[in-house]
Length: 172
Image: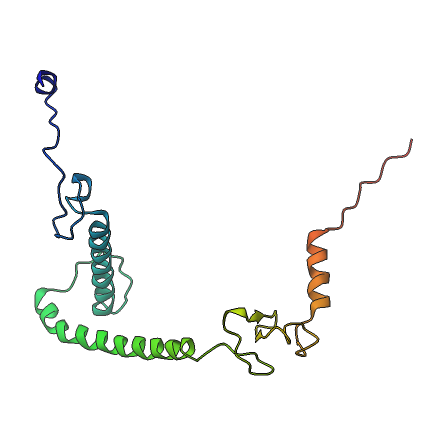
């Protein structure tokens, strides 16, 4: 005990719980938060910075001043508030429509063989032509594959075996 008084170091009194009350232990290195809450906080800060810079680009018209000129005054910020909401809602609509179309592709249904339309599930075979096939039609001759295996093999061999020419020797 006397050595700790001499050095000025103190042992922690007990484990510190996360300040977000998530039930995990925090540390001083992560501002008394658990690692997950700290990571979430940093991600939110980065997203806020990104949103602020994109908003500045929208307000400034994307002039590319690289932050050398001051940002427009407070009066314009008050007027730009609804504009930001409109732009974000438009972007949200575009993003939601594109995400819906991608979700439609994902929720297309069960995987089926391109030839016989049989459900293949996890046992489907992907061909080099980009299609999915059942065990019967997995070979290229069974599904009339348009992929040119001969040219692909020639290219692979040519890449793997470059032409090496030895220098000619001087004759004595």
